[in-house]
Length: 587
Image (cartoon, rainbow, N blue to C red; front, side, top):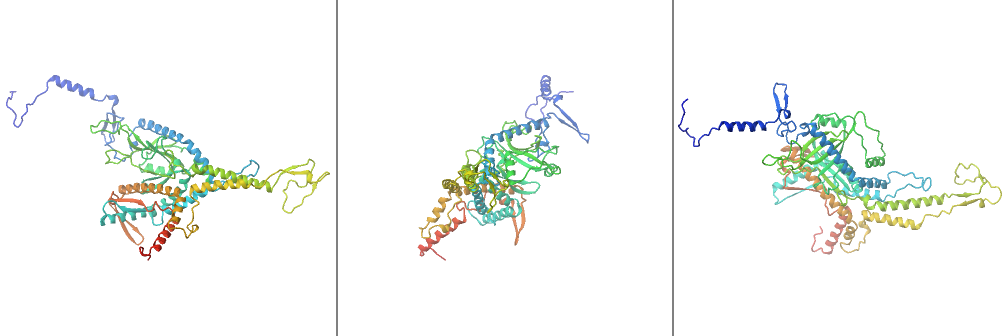
């Protein structure tokens, strides 16, 4: 063939053909970079095609899953089993680190006096009564907080952020009406669980709310979580900076099967559920008056551990712009079965459009009093000692009265009392055989004294101190001097209720965080326009209404913690107006 020495049209650069040595070198490099047959997985499909996976241990994230898919379905057991064992070991370590807290809380529950103690010491039938100072403080707080924080019209109010416009005001009203409608009408569990949470809070010092979208109910929920069912590392100081959050979930076998069929959990065999009962759960069950009958055969109860952790998951690593793994751990939610340690689900815990991959918050921490670490302090920790002292004094007073009213003593040998097996009845005279001598000389009573007035006074001091700390000895408005100076009543009331006021503000802040999480759920799962029916008409909410233009707040006023304070404030305002009628419109 003749050589063509003319230049090709429209080609400015000369074409260089590689030499034979260069081609051989490139072919060698390609052959060395190809995976070996031992590391290649070949699977034949039903339609006759063949899938070749050169790296069986690595799953391409873009194939067969979306951002919120269950990644456990895509990972082999060689990755899942060690991960499940590691997470369970971490959970047991976290739980062991707070054993002293659980023991203190469990022993403090006895101070409620829900169970009458049958005592045999110092004598058979000794008093087992418990002074109700702790139970009274808990009940008073629960009743007052429940009334203030959850009014009948709903707990949510809104305010406009930035310059107020007609459009923002309408948006604010829509958000307020919809959230109150959801909390009070749609979320039937919210009100009773909030009521129960306010009873747990002053006892344990910490309770939690979990806000999420429930796939079975197909709506948002805000579930009450006890401190016993939420475990964090001992080094954690808050939910936001905790490296791991472990939520213990009790789920019936039927509900678990529903989640497996729906694809939320892996469809694997879990066998017989592992029946585990902590010391704290056992104590709560005893106080409630129930007993464990073992697992139900028709619908057993499974214990799941939902771990909110940061992982460098094989096959789903965090990668930089160059596609190389960075080694940074990113948030995941891993659910394991407590009995088998098997992983049921692994899901990403960050948003699709979040380049920083920050974890999504699901939990809200409610604290009674700030503690020295992660968990708050409750009345058990603060006035538990006073309650024990008051209980001890009360029992001694009752026992002293019992021994004084029913004395015992010594009798002379040889004295015979007829029907001595039966106790003496009121007005009864029983025959006694006294062999010589005076009957009075044959018996000697033990020197039991009447209940001590000093002990009674000491008990009163303990009770007053506990009530004063718990702010349950509030001064009523009518107890004050009606001729007192303006503002005196309010000042006295606020001084006597500083503790309650501070607790009320903590609950206010936690409820605000809860409503923010709820608004995030609504903005994610609501359709663009959601119409709903209410009494007297129809309303609608837009998905775009839940943005940063509207601030969602509790309707409760953090500065007002009781109706007594409202009445006292109103009386003060009336006195001010009456003292200067020319400056105030009394009508």
